Length: 248
Image (cartoon, rainbow, N blue to C red):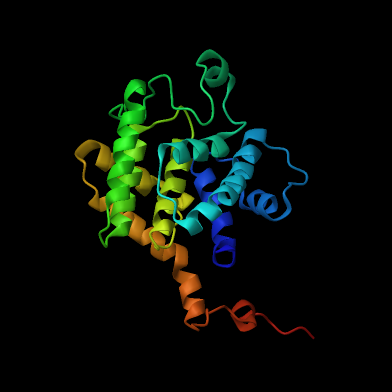
């Protein structure tokens, strides 16, 4: 799994983090994954914590993916604890007494229609969702994963980090069902949010399902081409030197 996900894990961490934190860069993310450190960094410490946490979460989940451990409330909380460690601000940590790995204690506006489960209902709503997707044994794993993601983001169980946790949970579910994981690319985030909003407003899942199908193909297009022996077309020297006069 490490061999096939070596590049994917870095790209997933970069794009998943970048969607919600503009300070995150691909170079810093790769440095953290490959060398465990970043040199000459001058940005926000939170950006580094978030990407280091992405690496820790990948390591935490590897064995569980291989064993195909089903989703559970405890696993969701632990993923959140790992992904948000060291990132909660003073208001959440001190004033609201909320912690990484614990469900929200207050209500948060999460969309144009203020969707989200009440704090008192989070655990029950999430348990119902987990039981529902764990029980699914049909062929359309990607649609089940889209439903898991849409419902998770609608419930909005944590004070912060719901997007990162939700995308990680979706890929965990896909891989334990023998389906390739996917990257939600930062450049596609507007369409991603529109698809989630459509589910929030109408409970229509087709748009998000098709979006995830597109992102799956985009994620693995080059890897599949290489595996099938298709040579990537690249520009040659002549493409860059046409029209230039020879030197004497």
